[in-house]
Length: 134
Image (cartoon, rainbow, N blue to C red; front, side, top):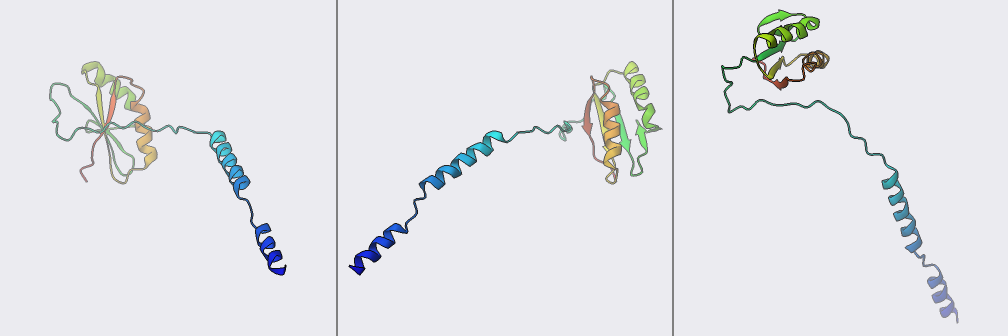
């Protein structure tokens, strides 16, 4: 009889895992449903094609930024606040849809974003990034 009692006690020690698995799946479904999916905004970057040579028929706008944040517009020094006026004058004389931005490798991100914001005021312009010669 003692043998039978041990056998009964071993059977009683088993734990049924089915309810626990049910709870885990319910929690998983709850967290999936309540999670908010946030789409982060970013900058759209259009890289220039390396195999195409730019056509000379339409002059392009070239804006370069040095390490210290000095902005050049088509090779001429310009203040960042006056950049939109220079672009507007250029667009009045030339028809172009591309502005090439060439930041130096050590340029601060804030300077690049400021120049991009100034160029983005012109809806007809597409910003392409060029590589610094340094």
